[in-house]
Length: 319
Image 1 (tube, rainbow, N blue to C red):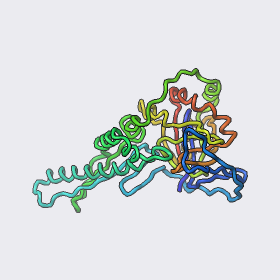
Image 2 (cartoon, one colour):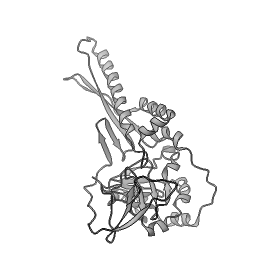
Image 3 (cartoon, one colour):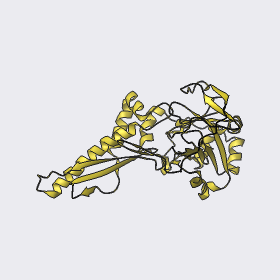
Image 4 (tube, rainbow, N blue to C red):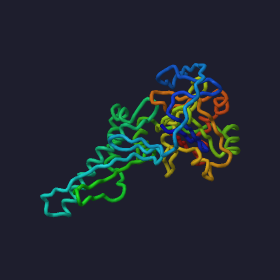
């Protein structure tokens, strides 16, 4: 299991590592409730725990491989392949190849749809749940899969007569998964409040926020939530779904190595690193902060629209 890292406003990063608990000075925070309710705090208790936290494996791209395809969180894409076989009885080789390629595309689309349905939207829901609950989502997801982008030309093996085609769609994009889900997620409220002093101070002092969940077992999802030390919802990124992937920018990216982020000129200067104390939610995709971190980031929800409008909203996850 690799460690997970998420970058947000002015760049916000988070890292995690295949464990559901993390130790800090001999203590851990444990989510008591199995599911997270946004209308009420997540009940959290502090327990004594002396066993050291697990070490993360060698960093790599954040990618999930399943039987039907791949969810590339780092590349912001979902990919799948399909194969078709030339009809040996068709003497028209060009026609046979074309028909085999069309068959490969159909199979790739079927595999891509199956892969897409397994993408985690939030801590409790996968894309398949949205498709079941909302007819419009089912139709939209089917549409983006049918219009999936082909990666390179079809590959033809003359010895076996097999043609392989690879298709992909974007996760965060108006033409991708996030665009298909906005009908169910809704649109963010219009920004009316002026920029707070805390937001202004952050923009002046820091190049990014780094949420380090490398010891907490954080898993990637499209819209993770961030909770304070008392279990109160600090930030629900799904509220800003309409902004993610708009104007050619990907607000949600996933990487496997914090150094990959901090080595980039835009993020190397004065990052604010925040340690993730615990992950919660059915899929382990939501973040619980410590008390000190919670106190210092109380402005995050109100300040997020300003950070995004400044082109500084970025969430990266290291798995």
